[in-house]
Image 1 (cartoon, one colour):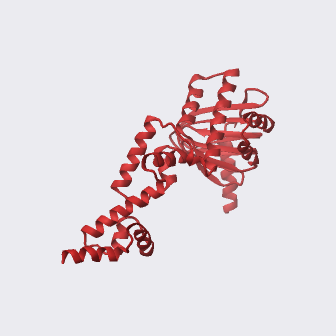
Image 2: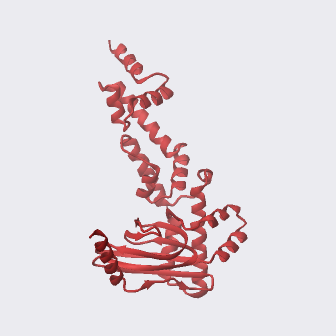
Image 3: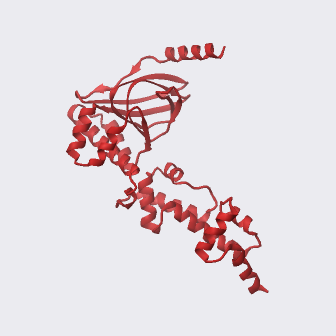
Amino acid sequence: MDGLNSHEKEKREEKTSSKFLKLIPLSPEISFMHYKKRFEKNHFQTLKIDDRYFFGIILGDDFRYKDSLGTWRRANRYDIFINKEMGVSKLEFVQSGSYEFLLFGILPGALEKMIESSQTPAYHYLLEIEKKIYKLQANLKIIRRAYDLCIEEREGLQAIGQVYILMELIIKQFLEEASDTSSNRKFDFYEWEIDELLKTSHEIKGYPGRNYSVGGISKKTGISIPRLQAGFKEKHGLTVALFVKERRLKRAEKLIRTTNLNVSEVAYQIGLTSRSYFSRIFKEKYHCTPSEYKKTFSAEDA
């Protein structure tokens, strides 16, 4: 019965797919698509992928897509997809949404020439992608370029040039995030990124007990992980994780000094669940355990 229902569902999905979405050739090597539409109810669309490297940027609302293994996954706003695969993908647009994305593909030989002309050996890492999807969040420069390409409706040689520039920016970010040395690069920060960095720093200082992660902060602020780490190093001299750790320890020291909370309660207040881990990192900073530190102030009060 379940198999029959699944089969019927697939048939319904096929019927709701009005036609294949296909990339439009801009040249023998480059294909491109700007898709923008609003749906008021659930809608399925089928996307045909040729045998080429393709790059996708989600500019509108989130939607679901079925990967090559038949698993449904979610595409979030400003996600970038890098893939080399031949086949058909199904896209599901949820109810009442405005959906927009860019897709552009390049033949393997053309991408190899582009990599050779860049004289950046690290670019060759990208050519190893085979039936895999790499997903990352676009930084502001990529988002701006993508929107410019959509708004100006460029055609012919202009469009090809813009697609190449956009592709180069995406590849650069891909390599930076894959490289351990990316955080050592110097970045010029946009005003909005500085505002977000300051806002995030203020939040961590005020609420160090919250659950923070580099990926979570990156998604919340829209700042890519390498730029986020570089911003914290530039402002605080610390990575995001070390900054969170320092603020937690400072709050813990104050709680031990000014309250009657026991060690486990203090650890919980700063967002840690392991008392032994808390005691270890506290001793690394203050050269004594939290219990010993508390006894010092209790003795002074006596």
